[in-house]
Length: 119
Image (cartoon, rainbow, N blue to C red):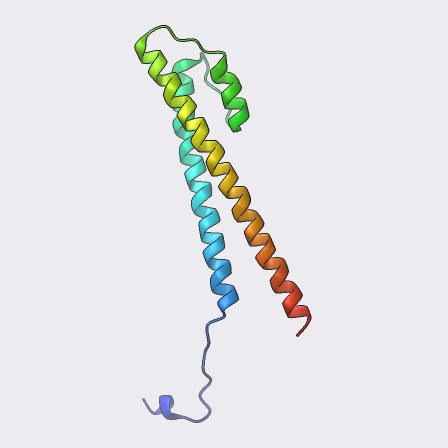
């Protein structure tokens, strides 16, 4: 307790820029996990719709092209296809948010570097 009253005590301050960067990196990581989960669910549906399924690294455009080739006739297949199309839409939205998060993080990092250089 005596150390708290010491005049030479160094006070620690929170660096707001580091807090913001941590928040932005955390958001980007969350979006990456959401993308992985969405792609995994889409792969599961594509395995049931297409013989052999789809390749491991799949973009939304590639998935849309694959689903366009499938014309199921039964209610189960039609439902799988509809769910796959919904997941592709979700994947596109997640990809847009990841791109925006990357841009935001890059912008914050660059503006931080410029402000540090002028100090």
